[in-house]
Image (cartoon, rainbow, N blue to C red; front, side):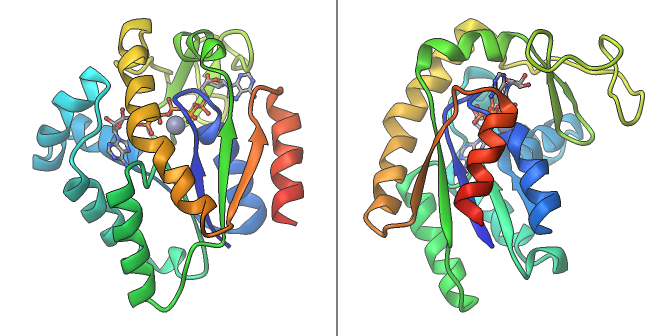
Length: 213
Ligand code: AP5
Ligand code: ZN
């Protein structure tokens, strides 16, 4: 399947992705994870993206479209994919349509993680991630077995630099202004499924499975 996950910061996209990936054997492309890896490695791409990311603003369409165009060439992504955090502007959605058209394919489903803004601050400020895998935990809602340590690798967990209440405000603003129109864009194509993203993680997984089965 060719899937897009759209939702505000903290809505659970990254939490549900590995489960969807395992079950449907897809490739998981998260532009946020890829950009953070580029920032950590101090690549030219990372240098260009860092300032916008730290402020909670979107990086330029050209940068992220380039990353996705490149990543979609991977052999593991030929039979299907999950795009997590992309497209986030209508321009990105149009470019993606073009890319897929050139490859003779299209988007099957857009999962819209619908949730009230008020819930998101607690989710974001309590999040801890394992940078190498992108796995995320939450001090209250999804604690690791050992505090501060990744369950699978035993490596330390970190907090994202943009996971503060102040930066969350800008990220939410960007979501409402620039990304909500993308949901309308796909709704017109009849491919959007709305998920009750405020439910506990396992219940959201069940809803995802209903949509995809
Ligand atoms: P990105 O990394 O995509 O961040 P985001 O969209 O803000 O989304 P998050 O990763 O914060 O949320 P999530 O939905 O994955 O939440 P999670 O599952 O971890 O982007 C970062 C930045 O990169 C952007 O600001 C921008 O600068 C740049 N960027 C990226 N893509 C771009 C693009 N296409 N164009 C331009 N710029 C781009 O869950 C959050 C927490 O809640 C976790 O702790 C989790 O354990 C917990 N949780 C999850 N689900 C539940 C639940 N159901 N109940 C209780 N707790 C839960
Ligand atoms: Zn995420």
